[in-house]
Length: 253
Image (cartoon, rainbow, N blue to C red):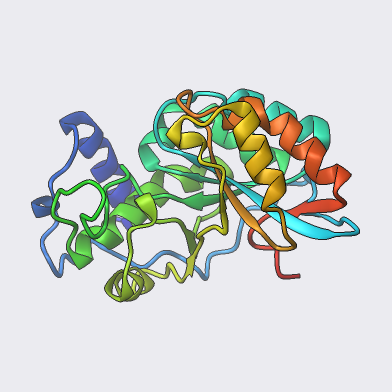
């Protein structure tokens, strides 16, 4: 059986059974391939309406959005970005992509970058969720399993870009996932703190006060965060300050 088919089947089994246990995939399981870096991306005949980098006299910043809970303000966020004509980067879990395939497809078709945020957002080290962390093989499986769901929706693999749940990582995590081809870990330099329940005004104030060339913002699409409602003012404020926008892949260009 081809590995893509195998992983897709495993993903559906996991969804049906609920949250999987790390013991499901034993160490050294041969069904854990590296992600297909050598496979070319599927390129649409029609270029996306939003370029991957929009220059500004003050430099560029990268807006990144995590999607792992509900669909929240995802539609509004995409509309705001579309109206402004600026790119962003979306890190999503496999479960979120499975529940919201049309939004994932729109992200890609609009021109945004989509990165891997694992299958179900378990802490790789156990630091934040206190569930004991994941084995090396399970860490790789979380990424490969998510990619099997996301890749068909966006037309190419998410490899090598990923963001860790809770950003819980260490040297062992970096080495473990690199074996699966995931070598570009995406962090952030500015947390809007929307996930903490900050008000729209506080999110806006913090976002503009900390703005700097090549800054990477982390925002969330979920309804418990006010990042979505704050986004139009954030974009307007950053533009007024002379900033352009880039995906994380084009940030250093």
